[in-house]
Image (cartoon, rainbow, N blue to C red; front, side):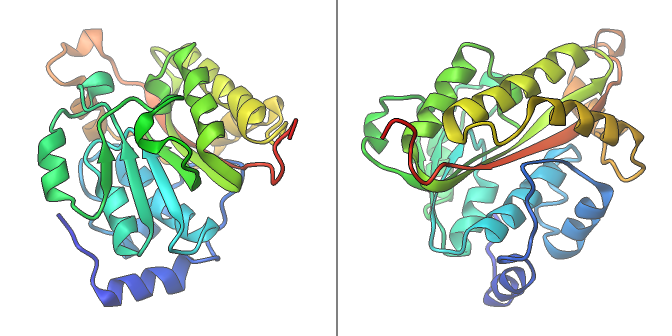
Length: 267
């Protein structure tokens, strides 16, 4: 477990706090990944897949959008590496994760509770009606490589919970693995469209026009700076499956960020 030093905290705050631009829709770039390798190397070199881009992006996005000590909730953290780094930066962080192995995630709930004491960890699916966070709101709710694994109608239920627990004016931001060429590309594009629809429905009304997602994916396809899942990352994802059953696909990180309406509709 990496613990930030006072010098590292000061450097990250000076570089990113209020300065890191977070558009409503974006995709991961080589430039951003290299910046993370320079300034957050312990998060940019964990496992040779897209999370090495997404975890540092989440730290930078949080600093760019909200100063500490904001109240944050992470959906489906797995090992809470980002949550702990944010706690080191004096954010108040809660993790909600079932730790049941779903989506290829870990099951080591007790180990994480013991190893990451600065993070509040709740072993549950994030949904409306969670007793542990009843009547609590957060300044930001985020996720890292989670939403692509959540099918409908559960995805809509998840965003209902986001709407319930995100304070007016708070931020909802997410990085999502998206296959743009190869097996399951149709599903992933449709899933990104569903995410846009639910963000517009439950978080901020029509902030992300649906056609903007198609433009973004076309731009990523033509951009030399687009950061793709590497061959090493694909081999990690393949696990023990024969290659013919899990051939290479082009995967990018699509990033969403929306600010909740200051006044809820209907209030």
